[in-house]
Image: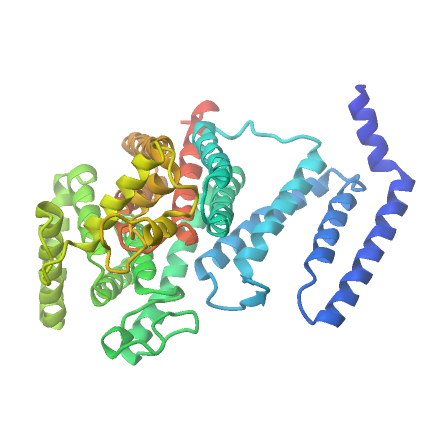
Length: 494
């Protein structure tokens, strides 16, 4: 037996270690209770000590079946984390100094804790089932570059905050790929996404009909023309409708591949209400994203018979929209025309000034050149736009463009790497889609593929999606599905 194995067994069976862990746990709990009674807040330092003690307790576990129970606990905790990520800060938010804690920000560190517990139980980190390592390696490189950019970032606080959000996003991708390695977990993720959509749609409809919002919304007290826009569980309408845009492909695939009439009816209702909420939010980028999703599905994924059915269905939907919502239908057509025109001609806006978005783009290119292609540093795009802009943006400092954010913050290398990461994922999923026969797997693959296509334009709408978990969930889901398919292939499963 190797020396390391002898040392490991001694640690697990040492009575002295048991005594030390028990006393440390007692002291940590005492300090935590005392700190809570004095400050009436969350005692972070004792909490961290307690987490360390829990790791120590794992050393005392001797039953091998415990590792199976921990794995089940880890997957359950991951599902809860995903649910909490979708909900965000809408409920159960606690202020802790300059930051706000809500379930997602609590559960994600717990996932890391139980991940470490799993490693200690096994005595090693088993990555044999991970078949998408190059994608994860790029994400790790991106995170490392973000940390290194602290050395030249002008606004250190913004950089640190951005790095934390990036770390959280990369973490959820790692966990989903690591734990969701079978089709049952992937189906669970898919139906969980649809279930959450079914909860969010009524919230959006309630906002649109009443003008009331959840406490997290930024439209509380807004002018009347904005008050009836839906924000869901997010701060602004753009985040909510971007989520809806990325969810519509899952609904479409559900309608296409589920045979039960009631399920299809529920899917059609969810689709219509999602489209309605996108319409009333007047998000031009998401209009285009939905059109792009539909065009990709129609041209690349549907056969001739499917195209005919889709054309008939679209005709019916348009007739319903024109008949039931004539004013909204007219406004959306006008808005899409304006958006297409602005993208193709780069015209001046009505007041004669240069379009703000164009100047934001120009400034970002200037910053990229001034930093020799290295970028301004993680999360510093807004700071540079506010303090070093060359072209007037009329007080707007946020690029409102995920792609521009990446090259401005991280430079040309990370931006090109991200493009390769994104396109490679789409291409590989498309190849998998063409080879699938199982209807359930094809439904999942189609939803992911179309959503990733819509992502291209949908992310032009929010001010920033770094801190919005659903974009990370989409990539996590896609990578987990691709990993599952490669794992099956490596095992020779047809």
